[in-house]
Image (cartoon, rainbow, N blue to C red):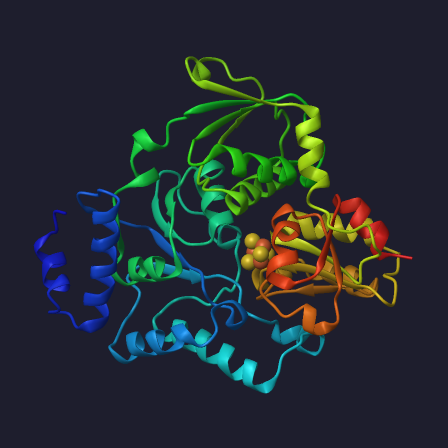
Length: 391
Ligand code: F3S
């Protein structure tokens, strides 16, 4: 890899251990994937924040970076943690968990990383079109590339943090125009009608597409929420980092391999995301974290209704959106729900709350819940989730 004189100094340790280690992570990654240079990035977004998912192992590493004087060189943010302080009474959090989670967040903060604790940092500040990023949250990566027109590979937690500290990332993958070109034409025969159907389609496509870049035909009128669910699901079951949605796709698809998704396949993918039809003891909306408009929509549907006393109704969003959506938050709380920030049902301890069956409109959550949370999953669109949660 070609390194600038400055990069070389960093690589050789002249700027200290923290930057040397970060540079070595990036160079090694670049060598593995055939990058010839590092390129500047506009922002970084690190994952690996919830104490539930990372445990103790990375804390020493983060602490060593802080002690060695590590500071982020570009705007940097982090994924959700293990709980929400404002709803702490509703979380299965011991004192030890609190202390560990506090420590992790504090270490990121000391490195100049903004602890936004959300998987939708683009609602706080959207990256510029064409900007190179180093983001680690896979749902955010697909959204950034496919909807916002930014350029980012799917980073791991350590490589995103290393990129934050160096301000650069290796130039490979979807940072290169040739790797962003469509390589398969997917014809969706039955137009998905809601966010859950988009998510189920995404789970199916993630499994069958490998690292191909699809043009998706047959998705007219797809809303931002639909594309968010589609991309998050594709990245959950597969390698996706970018897709191109279109209603009818003329020139771009010429000469490409074709895949047709028929009604039966889409239905099978949807049904496969439920492992039970039992009544849920938790209904969880907001994976990925809700936008302002999604919180508003949930408030409109639930206004004047009451959540069943034996059901936990969680709407997850960023602290930023929760503050902006104050009136809608009040409506949801008045109905007996909670608007939870800084975490989500997947990266907090829901089983420990006594939850056995979790209902959601998120294909990503339905896919992960049985393994990561050891709960049964019931998958349905938003309206149905709210109707089931309420009396
Ligand atoms: Fe976000 Fe949690 Fe889903 S981090 S993408 S809400 S699993």
